[in-house]
Image 1 (spheres, rainbow, N blue to C red):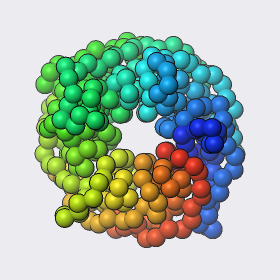
Image 2 (cartoon, one colour):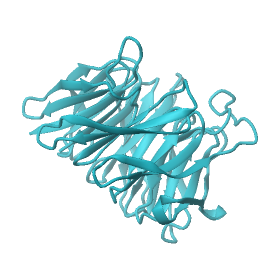
Image 3 (tube, helix red, strand yellow):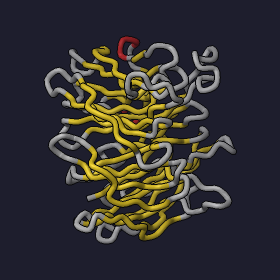
Image 4 (cartoon, one colour):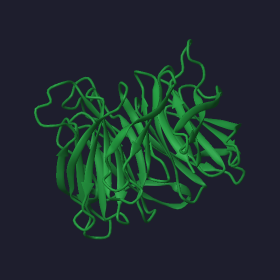
Length: 354
């Protein structure tokens, strides 16, 4: 089986290629770079639909952010640049295209803001619909990483009524009600999710039609599990589990989080320990149990994804600059060694398309 893969990397004077197009051959267990694209500066996060690709530019050198749109050839995966829009905010680090295909949300890490935007029928980017700047009365528990608001991701609720926004700097997941044309209004106070001081929420995923929410805490190196019993109006923390083995004393920050396609297994990545932790998830209770730890075959596994056949996992290792193809046992969730890898300097993101 041939899969199209896209990776995003930080750019600089030495590395000017930002988006990489790859081909994964599961029969040969090979991964190769097909071509690269340089229209976007530091595209550290991508969102891919059947016909389009959208990239953020994680820039800290100005008070503006950039989102770029590309047309995608379904047959061969080639990309054609469409347009870019300039927005408020700095160091945009996450983008989420909504299921309607007509709107998106994006997170600005350094400036601590979130906004929604329009996507036109031809896939090009329109204007900004709503912009929300998070505010802080002072530094958080971690004076370096929590010196103010730092928004890291946005996720739409399963019913499409609300947007959840993880703010690492404020130890909070903001909840917004979505109005007409993707406008954002803060939801009621009981809908907001507060974490203990110093945990640093980063990425989150929903399961079981939104009944459960799973969140990585980057600074606390934990996975928080939440459950709703009122149809998504409020979420209650029902479990907190470390991403690290007992006794680990090295420096580490938790990063990405994904479920296997069958929903049986949950993975989170550790930067420092340079590993992925495997959990088994109970479908009825939502609780997770740690099953093992697996090396990332590189340094700083910032992002990863699972192939549509559930048999492989791809890891983007930022500091070692490599994308690794790992074999995966779909029955047990275990990772079964490295099959192949390619070098991509300062790679930050990887995703696979069937």
